[in-house]
Length: 402
Image 1 (cartoon, rainbow, N blue to C red):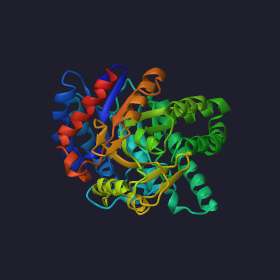
Image 2 (image 1 turned 120 degrees about the vertical axis):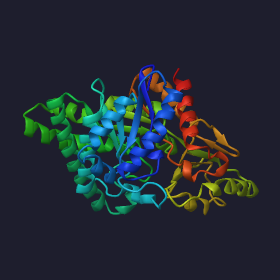
Image 3 (image 1 turned 45 degrees about the vertical axis):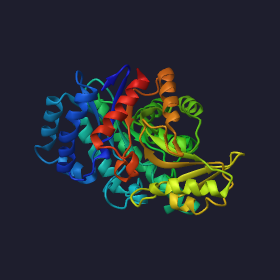
Image 4 (image 1 turned 90 degrees about the vertical axis):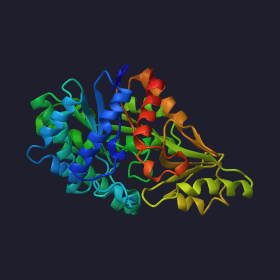
């Protein structure tokens, strides 16, 4: 929906289901009711998650035209897709498999190109549209410097293949489509420093050389081409877990010419670590309900001198709770954005407010997507009904904007 200068939506990865039939059923069940509550008098934007399975089925005869007709009838539009999770994402163990297949594989390229074909067919004519994607791969799969270099090389080649397709689409249809890389803890690209390094040391040098030779354009034009079509999915939760200074990050990205495709408005857990062992036991008790088997919940602790220590999952961190010298933990657990705390635990809601204010000032992106996909695994005391939760989150964001 259009709020002020922004398009606000929620990501439908909140809904279980991998087939197109299940995905479409969820859209028909939830979206009209949500729209009636938050956007009754204007078109409602959808942040659509389509799995590989669903994308194949959606391209079968009649399905895409049926979706387009449904969108028109219900006064809805799609301006962003979530192309990060390839396969199963609910009611099964996901953990590090959320990165599989990664950007070293043909499967990831083929899936992403198929998503762009779908988005090109349904996107609004008067705006750009993007697809968020993984941070290349999961870093713990690639231990040696040689393995990491191979990931970078293969991922660059595959990303530039997608860029080439998007450039052709722009020439043929006048559509501006972009692939939005989403940094995440323990991804190959996990923070702003890694993101900028990937652009400056890998993607831009390789891409500029490729497109200068292929299309006979200047190096400056080739650089602009790449930066138009590869952007950043700025997940506020992920940057908060890394203790990033949002103002500094956004300014640095702007200086480098790296654009924000969309902001994913999401909150992480944070907790100060008490000095007394007895108080730490209370922290452990409060965190235990958040230990679950579906998703990775990486933890980054920080000491008083700023030294950070990363844990691959919450159970790994809890094993060190009694002895750690860290003063605070931030936990990759997408908690409801409208709550600032949960008993003794707090959230990084303030980071969302900061980013919204910075975006109002800097106009980095007009695309805002609420992404809280963990409702099914939240502790019961903050587990609301799904429709009610989505509406409450969108209403909260609307109030912050207006």
